[in-house]
Image 1: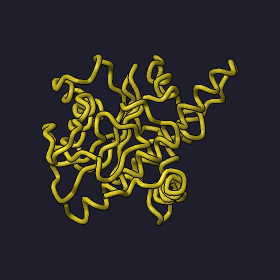
Image 2: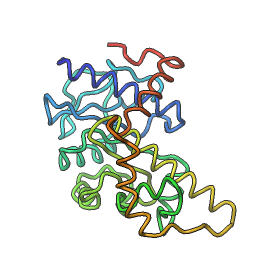
Image 3: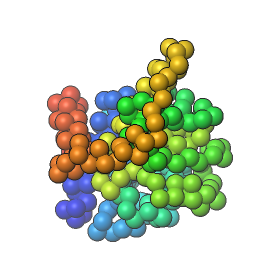
Image 4: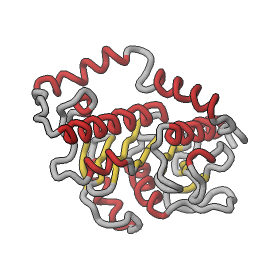
Length: 245
């Protein structure tokens, strides 16, 4: 194991614990994956059978783009996860970390005909950043890979219609904050709709300005680094042991 892989294993395990702490887990389903730069055709994924809160650095599976296990493990990878994540990792070398959620709010927006509206504080941050992919049933068919990648295009976030949310980034931190922002946007949209009140629209002009405004907000710290570091400290206190190697 290289030092790069060792560090990535620890951070990915921490990320799974963060997702569990935030209530983004789904029994033993869904996935967060990260590429191993030393071996670009390999990535780490959760074992199919462990809850997010149980995952450790040593229990993560190392798999190839084609779905083969690189290391021995009593666990396999979820076939649905391999279809989605291997497709994106193979097609988008810029996206090193990919997350996939089935949260209530994310699914509610994914099932809505008009999808995500850019009319709240969080959703406007995603203006022109989110693509859509039509539902084809359980994602266990390799034939869907090409269409999924085409739907994603140059974007880094994808709403899988009738299914859930996908977010990605160049680092674990970037993927985490992208996931958090999309999830919050969905939560606020669902909450607004529940009031039955008309929502105040946000203009396209404001939407277009948002990317520039975000650069000012992020500054030199790097996208997601502060937020991820804070949540990592939280899970290190409340659910330690993720760094077990």
